[in-house]
Picture (cartoon, rainbow, N blue to C red):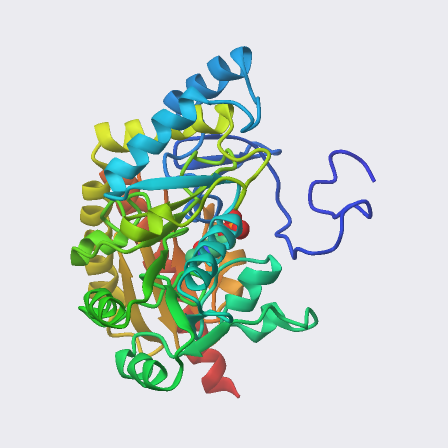
Length: 407
Ligand SMILES: *Cc1c(COP(=O)(O)O)cnc(C)c1O
């Protein structure tokens, strides 16, 4: 196979991904360029990772400067940049302390271990964590066991025990579990579900969760791997309901693509881990921390939380205006620049159609167009994206109804 055969898979790679037949050579802001020089508007941003777009000068400078000084030393030693990042991240998240890993799944592993240790500290021998239907928490054994999607679990049994499943956005179901299960010590939940189809819970859900957890003595643990770091229109989505959880996990946008994640804790949860309880060789290394500091500083300087909220509201309004009346469009939803357009039929083919027109989008849960564009879009780019999506979905709806009419 030749090196230019960008559309084909190598037998040297395990066959875990169904990939689109394109490969990119470089990026600039919201745009990616393929090996033939074609330009694409990246409206999925590496699955919510490239919040500052591609080749952001502040991130590039931080990485290149740090790479020339020091990449890794391990947590056998103090790491000055890790200390700075922890303080900065805790400040914007209003949390007390944090642990750094390298992926979203690892951040959730830390949260799950923290909750179990907390439970054992209370004399509960078999502590249980409530998790939601339709959730996504990662692909490691504990996180896929916590995930509410059988497709992700199938074939990997035996699953990790100690999870109790409940419907999303349903407080009564949790009250019912509280009455019947004395082993519950925590709730792990996404403030809005990403992979599950950009599902937004009812207003007040997080506040009600906070009250219930306080009443039961449970830890409230929010998986903000996707919704965190300005994406939802707030630094963290929980701030939209003025809720302070016991644990927040975050990852995707943290270093704009350099692998790093964090498990943040507040109050009693912040004192659960002691030396030797958890660790990671790479976690919070100087290179990743330098990149993450550049990201957080840029998000602060450019007030990207507010910006994401405004742009997202504008885009949703535009989708509502132009797509809301289509029979095929069943829902338009999201928070900030985490947007979903749900159709009445499976619509995975839209990804290919959009790509042919120079737009990279994603379809999740089979029938929901998901947008996670870079937060640094300017007004004109946001309009360009909205207009392209509206045309794409209108054309799809028209083709669908004429197909339906001819059969
Ligand atoms: C992406 C994601 C994860 C997993 O992150 P990885 O970095 O792929 O391990 C976990 N939780 C949520 C909500 C996510 O969106």
